[in-house]
Image 1: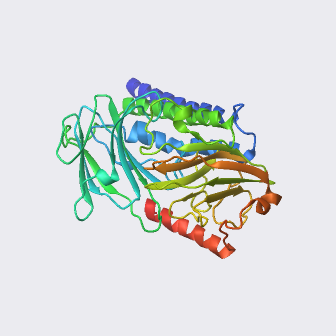
Image 2: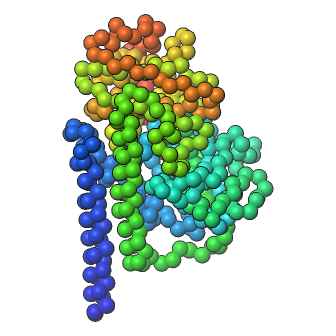
Image 3: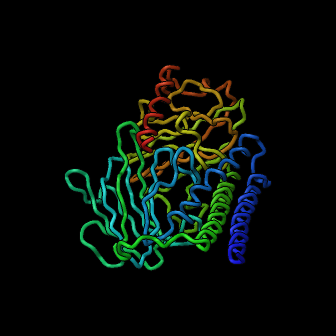
Amino acid sequence: MASDRTSELRLEQVWGTFCDELKAAGDLVLRETTPPGEVTRASGLRLLARNISLALQFELENKDPRHPELLHYFDPLRKQGGDNADALYVGAPVDGRNSYRIAGHRGSARYFAVTVLEDGETPWGGRVVGTLFGPDLEVDADGHFELFLSPEEQPGNWIRTTPETYRVTFRQFFADWETETPMEAGIECLTSGPEPPPVFSLALLSEGLTETARWLRESTRYWADTLDRWQARPNEFIAFGEIESSPIDATPGGTPLISYWKLRPDEALVIRVRPPQCDFWNCEFGSYWWETMDYRWRLSSTNCHHAALEPDGMLTVVISHDDPGVANWLDPSGHEEGYITFRWMGADDSPRPQCTQLPRSQLFEHLSPNVPRVTPQERANQIAARRAGVRRRFRG
């Protein structure tokens, strides 16, 4: 009986400590640099709540590199770190000393890349040790592929791992949300054999919940601290690498250009740039917490497929708290500040967008007559198409 009581006390301690650490993580929302608005602060607590499940996935449910699963990171209800509204991120834990086989159907996302990375200083790892882009991935006539991750060279698709390698990530960026299809694939560790994972225990629970709370706290604070550096320079597009030098699992093939915006209800922000020739480009839009707006129900992004350009190839994006009827409108969704990102993937040039902030009442005095407009029905059709595309991507 004494051992049973000891176990009960330990269980209470493990759960109580986990709950206390989750509660303490909420201090992030009340710190001095956080904008004071109710929408922003409520969204900050929602960010923490949403990311508990992601932290549990990484640190408890899918942490064993001998028994990995390819699981998605972000979706419309779970976001952080400048998640891309066009993206599906899928990954798994690996041990670089072991060998892995990933097999499945490549799908048809416009941009496709695989990265293998080492553990590092950031909550999302460190140095990328290997990359494979979609055009370089060997697939059969039906779109199926095999990819090997191992220290020793393998025939066909292969990425070399190092002893410090701990994660593989697949990035798929969708241009046409309604027609492009996501990858379907699985991973197996060739080194560990068919034995099942160890029986779950209190020790595994304790370690997993401790690391879950730590990752939640550190990851959300890392991204808020990072974005605060852009907050000091609003309406200026700055490359990620110009502000953050720590190695991280960044999207390969193009450096994101990021700007911080602040917009009162009576203002509008006009952003103009001529997109370069490239494999894929997009414009992402989100809140102070570096998470996208609700891209199922609101216009919070555009890309090389959806954007309406002017006859000379110029892109004009308008941010305003009400719909001005221009094609490339971004909806702040009640937020009065946040971030906006442009990605030019596989481009020879990296033009930096230019921002003009002005009273909302003067917007059409400033806009060129060539800026494409939309009717209310066309806007409703845009939203309906987004919802259909999200369901297709996330199979919901």
